[in-house]
Length: 316
Picture 1 (cartoon, one colour):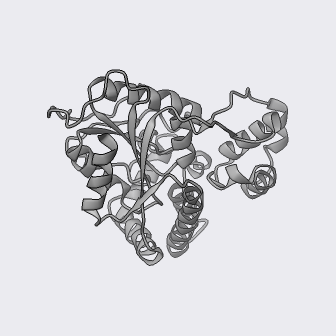
Picture 2 (cartoon, rainbow, N blue to C red):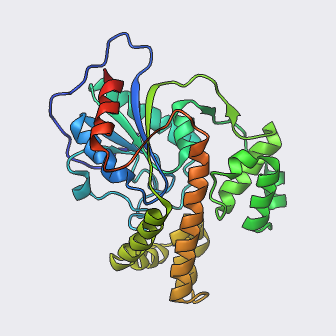
């Protein structure tokens, strides 16, 4: 398991893990992109002696910092973070890799009497980690991959929508590799993923409730801040270091449209507009995915007393 460098907190644990507990307690924080998950998770980790495991399919990659909103060492405020900077972006880190490493992290955190807190916007990864779904072991199908290789991302996404509408709701529709893999699994099993009835952990899931106008403004402000702090330079340096524009485009909305801008395919205004529009569309897909989960306790960021009460009750 790869652990992001940090300063470990050494305060006395604020809750006890019963020796014979059948399921370990895990706190999960979800919400659409730009809703404030990171700040809430750090606040709760400090209050309840927790450690954070990132459930973000892009933050596992080294060098993808500004574009993914990766928490900085200063922002961590001494709270240990796991599953950041695990592999180089040239490599592919799968949901199966995340499930293996994430469960190792949970075991490690519990072994030290601390509370595992899962935070991130890749909800397919979160559900797989918790045991809500089973990640299928399907070997590569080279014949199918060759057939799909020349298809556009739009065609691949439409095929997935037709064959497995549920999976299509929480997949990056601009990531050709991921779309082909999903179709490969559908071809083998008929659908992806299979539902698993029993979860592996005792889970409290807090969902951040935020109104549409505030969320849109957050997305707008976040883009401006990231561009000011060097997101364009980050993409330029990644390409100079050998990462192809094709691969950059597979690593998320920001990297896709910044790559197009750098290559002169779109203007700066078009780049900004596309990132904002696609980010908003992504946020709406995230909310659709979350609405199906009736176990989520929805809270607003300023409802501090309510949040503390929910967590205290859960830990008792």
